[in-house]
Length: 123
Image: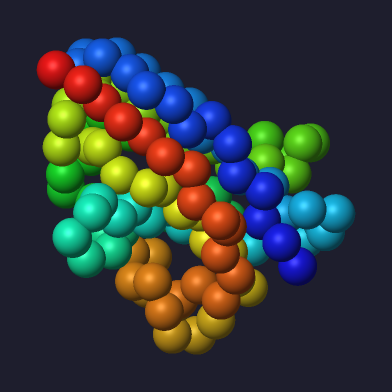
């Protein structure tokens, strides 16, 4: 089970990027999460979407980021707007089946992780 991420790039402050994440060759209903980690910083939750489409966002990205899903393509996106230098990080998508202890912004809720994609925002 692998997660295929794409979309990391460089952007200017105020710009937008869209990350994509899809289970590679596996179709199912998963909770999907987005996390990020900047150099020297701890991993930070960004957003998640559960098996019924309920989304949760970290306070730092509310109103700027969304995580829509395309069920036909079995893909989840992280649409990032109004980017700032503070958004610079390696972004990871994560997935798991819905468990009873699911916490939408807690990394231990997700068993499967992508390789990460770099987002760099310059001022």
